Length: 152
Image 1 (cartoon, rainbow, N blue to C red):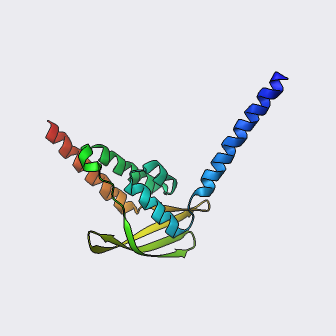
Image 2: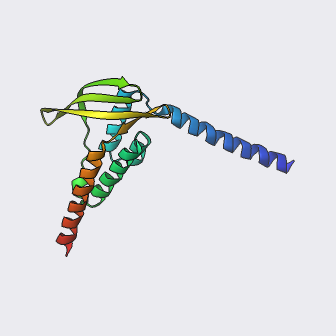
Image 3: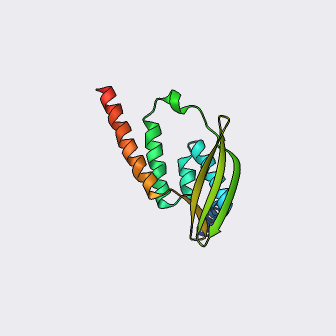
């Protein structure tokens, strides 16, 4: 009887865990616009793990670079939380690729930007073009070098 009771409890725990995982996966936004907005909100609030769930592999690399960059900054420089204010967003889909052209309001100015997304296994994910990750890596190395020189 004890074995049956333990088995039922274990089955219940596994069932609840699977249900929670399914709800989490189902809770992800899945249109180019909603993914873009949610991804940017996560980045703005330094929630890089959550942003990675809505990212292509290349965007995940970019997020890791940003996270490492922020770790190298003094706390007073990273304490302020920034919120991206999308004044406009227009997304177009072509097969498994989408582009969201945006107008972002920043300090009274309007800045145009574009987010590129890829559909991977049915889920839209923000991508970061390769040239951005390469430039970011070079800038990161330069920044780390300057930090190392300042501490010597």
